[in-house]
Each structure stands twice: as C-alpha cells, then as structure tokens.
Length: 202
Ligand code: HEC
Image 1: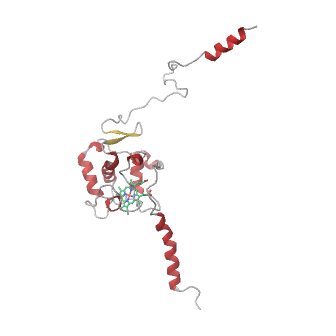
Image 2 (image 1 turned 90 degrees about the vertical axis):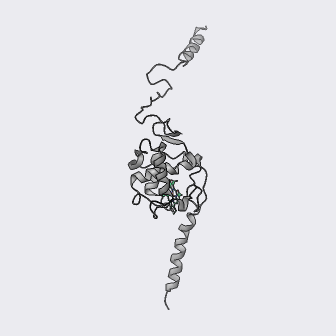
Image 3 (image 1 turned 60 degrees about the horizontal axis):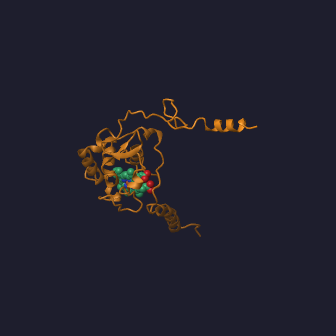
C-alpha cells in the first residue's frame, strides 16, 4: 500500500495555497498610515512641476488604464474611475487615507509592491518617469488639485508648496524662537517672586 497517493498530495498542496488567497480578500480598514519609505526611496520626489502638468497627468492615465502597455493595467484592480474592482485593492478616492502617503512612500509602493498582496512591484515594467506619471494621475481620485509639499510634509493646493530648498526654522525645545530671544509673554520670574514673599515673613 502506498503511503500518500498522488491525489492526496495534490489536495494537500491545494489547501496550503488557500490560506494565502484568503488573506488577500480583507476589506479596506480605517485610515492607517503606511510605513515610512526605506532609505533608497526616502529622497525620491515627484519631478518639479509635474503635479500641475495636465499633459503628464493624461500620460499617467494612459498608463493606469493599460493603454500604453497591456501588461501594466492598474485599473484592472484599482478601477478605471478609482473604485476598486478587485477585493483588497487600495481605494485612491479615500483622501483621508491617501493624504497619509508622501510622494516618496507612494513611489516606493508602486516600485516595490506590497508583499503578500496582489500589488506587484512595477519597477521592471515601468521606468521611473512612468511611475511618477501614474502617481500624478492616481492622486486625482482623492487628492485632486493637491500636491505634496516635501518641506512641510503634507498635501497642499497645487502651486502653494514651499520651494524645495526652503529650510524651516527649527523651534527651540522650550518654545522660544530659533534666534534665542525669549518668547513673548514667557513667565520667567514668577516662581522666584513667590519665594521672596515667603522669605520676607518673620
Ligand atoms: C492585480 C491587482 C493589482 C494591480 C494590477 C495593481 N494593483 Fe495596486 N494594489 C493592489 C492591492 C491588492 C493593493 C493593496 C495592498 C495592501 O494591502 O497594502 C494595492 C495597493 C496599491 C497602492 C498602495 C500601497 C499601500 O501601501 O497602501 C498603490 C500606490 C498602488 N497599489 C498603485 C498601483 C499602480 C500604480 C498600479 C499599476 C502600475 C497598480 N497598483 C496595479 C492590487 C493591484
């Protein structure tokens, strides 16, 4: 008698595969911030001027819907109008969630994908410029008219981002302005006065 028939073996392998399929079907949860971009992506940013460039956005749309390359069809999961058509695909219409993604994080995810999900790495199919174009388009579903300000680290109306080389003044730990002058209205001597008053007695 054989210990494990070929048929049983096939059944066993099938069951093991099923558990991964189930985990890919989870619903969109609350707006959780994504993990930070790894160092090799942390300094990658949208080319200057592209957030506002309608031609770039249209080229991004062509990539997104698979018109450029039939093998790259983001819409087949994320939906032509941004409404996901495959379970678990990120819903870019959710501004609440997507505003937590910096341009670098967005670019990292498109490049490297998300492990153990249907979101594959696209870096071998899309050159860097095409990845940025598709992001310029994807953000129109929930963050239309916005651009990512890499100095303030937040989404702002297009055209209002600070110049990228702006150095923000760093506030001193006690809240005093960076130039060292005490902040206006800072109580400096109140505790000392109270001590004096006590000592004066007797
Ligand atoms: C086969 C289906 C599929 C295709 C095709 C696909 N995605 Fe995704 N995508 C997913 C799924 C599923 C997720 C959710 C992954 C997760 O759970 O974090 C996702 C998530 C994302 C995210 C967010 C990642 C995160 O950290 O939340 C971005 C950005 C994204 N996709 C962009 C794209 C772009 C751009 C394309 C086309 C080049 C594309 N996707 C094609 C299925 C797909």
